[in-house]
Image 1 (tube, protein in one colour):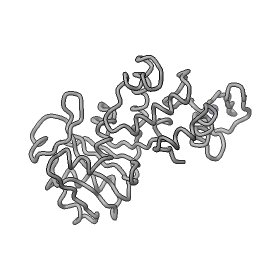
Image 2 (tube, helix red, strand yellow; image 1 turned 45 degrees about the horizontal axis):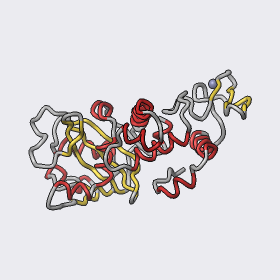
Image 3 (spheres, rainbow, N blue to C red; image 1 turned 90 degrees about the vertical axis):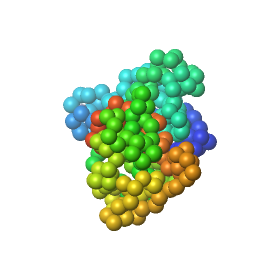
Length: 265
Ligand SMILES: [Zn+2]
């Protein structure tokens, strides 16, 4: 089920608490309720509390065990927060979120922490189709793209390589890995581990990527007069760099993200 990334469609689809609730129910249990703890079915549903009881007695709601777990924040506010996090080109600040959805700073901060953690989940399937690939190093608490040749090499700053499935204007799944250096060997191994052959990989002109077509990928190189211009031609991977949870991204072997998953983390 698609999570709308168009503001008008979003507004129309999630205009009530009930609509949000129904969306979560359908995403979580497309074939009917299953207890997340023991996989048993429902023996009863309390409409007023929106709670299922499983065969072993667990009381489960649509938000149980998700980023919204026991939060008492309106679902609509969570939905707007997830929307803003997944669509803003630059990282969303807690102050900004607080202002936009009308909650206290502390609440917004907690929501951002939870949503960003929810964006990261272990999954080893290969992504496919059109995939943007780029590398960045972590400096002063932010991810910065390592554009100039040699930059990031031989430095002790953590480097991450990130692949994002491009679905036109929206992003699909993400794979990310920490690497020691931006050598062809490291970048090619990452591509082979997490991107299906026959995919189209879009990168900048870093020479380390030049062997990708030899490995069976279709390789498209984006060039431009400056790193800013090149970044515009790789929009999804650059948005991922500004939105991803930094500590997770630099320590996790492989992660994935889809907007609808950010709820179900
Ligand atoms: Zn149960």
